Image (cartoon, rainbow, N blue to C red; front, side):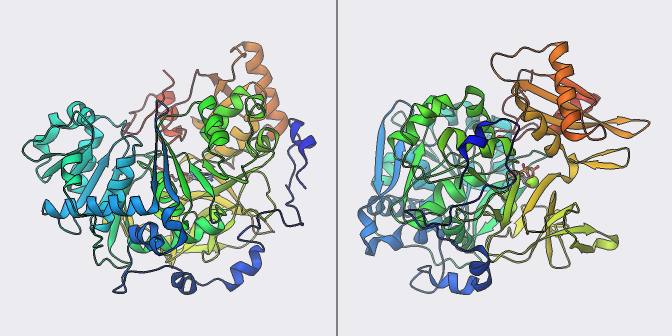
Length: 597
Ligand code: ATP
Ligand code: MG
């Protein structure tokens, strides 16, 4: 049973959160991990998809049109909540018509299957229609985050050979028009909004789409047809463009069922923006494939708004990220307690390590633990996860998805790897190839793509270990690991220990070169409201970390910051903390969101 009392007791993080043996009212889809894993076959799962009438596969068909023959047709597919409280709902039927119209509108412009459609918008309903409609037309969709500046937008459009750009008049004016010269391949711009005007190569959404037929005619795509182009978060360097195919929808379906435990008639909310892979795989595709109601919130993070959405929309399954959870923790659990969150059944988190403190805080604030899961832009879908019916070990990312074999490997000479089978030993997290949502290339970087694979493994670039019970533990990104006096130190462990201290809201840890020990650990810390930086607090935090971690691993220095630099997808940019500490070039900052200065 989940022990609320011990969760309140700061610093006493339980080793294991035991899931109830008695079936809860909604039985988890994955009841017995080992049994489901043993019986799992991708081929059988493929039979649960509809497929195209001619035998092909198309993500948008699985997400929308396949539901039309069932009771789901009238169900709300997308429930949109606008910034100013406006609401729009699309049933599956209405979404099918709208997306077919957009697909036909693209055809009317002469846009061919395989051509790239870039989408640059806030989370407005047209974004969802454009993504799904373009997939129906057989085009390749590249969703861009709307807060990008002109240069990152132009670079990505150039790299991806954008043929069509769907955006708003304001974003177009401010960010694209000035660089249009550079984008020779960009033939059509579709503008969403009342103030949009037609012009040469510029089309008003309403005129274009209203004139198009709602008759479905999904392109004859197959599981290997290119479908999506997603740029990585740029946490470790210049973002890469990962290529995904329509076959990925199989992984979205399976992870929606097992990792997110989506049930028929659920209300689901994924807080990620579709400009990042999570916001597309789980903010659009997986919930619609599962036939649930997908809540879309236009506004950015704001704790009162979020609690309001969870309560008022009766959200059953909520998928969010550690940065947001830490921001909610910053203002305290009382804010949650003032709301009726009884509809919530399952909460999951992705994108960064989820500190044990945050898992347990979920119980304090919501009566439910957060379920961490791990994946990357390159993997296309959730790969390692904590499941509804499986005990949680706070701090662990869980176990590999049924159908996925994960291992810990060490790179050896000449491009080979060796698997580390002993429990508790750190190495690189690797996945056995292939799986349906595995990336099929890095745009324009074949060599870099090839280097991600060796001896039948995909090498993730993250370090982890696996314990004797088969739970995976994240150590850090290979690039971020600190080598100090013969120890390999993962920043996550140090950051988690700091986050246990009541004053600490966020922590980022780096290695600073040192002539004696190689590197020394330095921590950057942002404080919770009500705490001020001081010498005394600095000493207290150093002492706390030493007590928790031992002298070899604890930071030798702590610097206070108002906030830490993060990517727009919410990841702490340790490389930037390090570059600034060492006075080195800052590198690609196209995805930098908040900054310390
Ligand atoms: P880039 O590859 O450009 O540096 P990125 O790796 O941050 O950017 P994403 O694909 O958005 O781009 O993020 C995937 C990475 O996020 C993972 O490789 C891992 O480092 C981190 N991550 C995701 N989920 C988790 C998790 N549950 N625990 C720990 N780390 C996670
Ligand atoms: Mg990466």
